[in-house]
Image 1 (tube, rainbow, N blue to C red):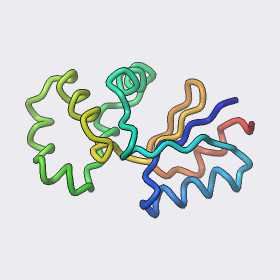
Image 2: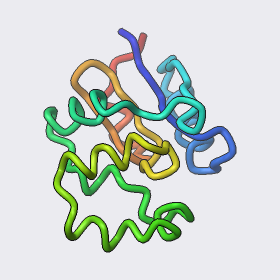
Image 3: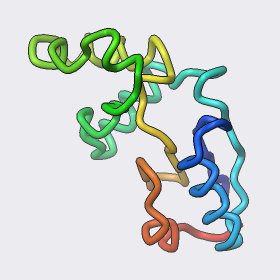
Length: 118
């Protein structure tokens, strides 16, 4: 069972989340969100699987504030928001843990327990 962990290596929250997965015996491929942004297709597939687009934004990030994304979210279409998220991985909330149809956004160790071990 393949598990994908999308995070930022310098982020302490991502470090804690990855350690929590390891503690549960879940091996995950680590993808650096800054080096490899989520694609439009990936983001759309997450939304199709029930993830709210609002949960995908890193609202506490510097880039989010610099680009005034809070205001843009009020007027942009979903397609424009997806394009924006795909433009820079630092706009995306992290970590993201994906295993088959399960997608966990943010550091949620209690939710990690529902994942299958490899």
